[in-house]
Image (cartoon, rainbow, N blue to C red; front, side, top):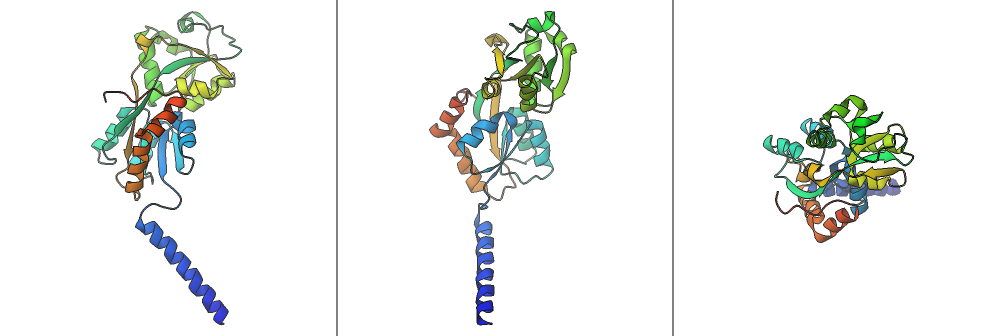
Length: 248
């Protein structure tokens, strides 16, 4: 009986310690970081100890509006973070990196695409992200700047995030697709990059913010400080992202 009583006391103390730790601040399971799909590789490489939910920024915005247990939101476009900020759902967002767009084709390049203008003259199966996703909006900006909006008639699929676009081209399920330079880099053995002229590039700026209802705000703020630090910026640079913009 004494042994059983001792075991019960020990179990009770263990549960109490876990509950006390959770109440005191950061969960032992780590931060819940909701981040744009294009940040998948770099965030995991930078800090593999946290819990991540990667998806299109528009999808993540909706999830946070619906009360998802996020601590941090990192978006591939200011629009999503700024809307949540205006609604009081995240703290003031900050810019933490930038990116560029690229056209990718499979290594075999069945459509013979060598220039972005070939999309207009060749028989092409084009895949892009839908317009609600930042990369989809940026894609349409590029096409408009280059007077190539007519190629939207050749779109065979509109995907929910940049990883889906990248995957379809890499697997040869499409002749071409618009993605971020960083996503093209992740599958460089499967695709070839067709450069987009600098003058046609949209301003691709990423913002990050602490979610207002986070139970781990202090830890979340420290994490954001880390990604803005020299170490965090070096990780982003190594993954192909652009330096922190001088103006926000």
